[in-house]
Image 1 (tube, rainbow, N blue to C red):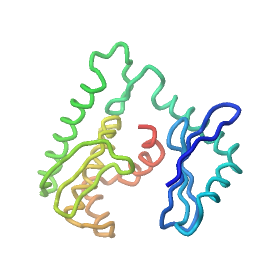
Image 2 (cartoon, rainbow, N blue to C red):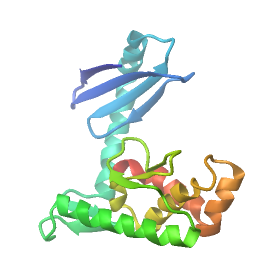
Image 3 (cartoon, rainbow, N blue to C red):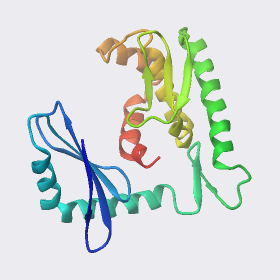
Length: 201
């Protein structure tokens, strides 16, 4: 992995170049000041850096687009909680208290859907995850992303149902999606929302 910084006329952009088992270059805007570039394992970090430098104007525009979308989804001075915007100054709970309250809500939802589906995780953990909304382990444990507390309750339901259904089907086969659809018919729409908005949570 290679990390660094490129200064533009408007800001300094942090970059991270990671070698992965991919055939193509994949660039991701991580936040308002950083990007991540995945390159094939056989390629060099120099080529990756050259790619970033060559496309810096496009990257800068994508970051501006990211900032605009972020301002729409969670304007400055607000906190998003269960799909609603709370005015930070007017809300009585701190971020830590919101996370504690949100974790209790997630756990209660897991309990509710476990009883409906008839499957029970061996262990449930809630913590910040970098690239997943939920993980179902082969030992029957489930981890949920703490950032889910920002999502609409229906989206939270989808993620929980998704992970619980992995206790029935440990894959993404047709049978698995049929199981998910049984309890959450609109799962395709929920997937689209997470894909388009989830990175702003």
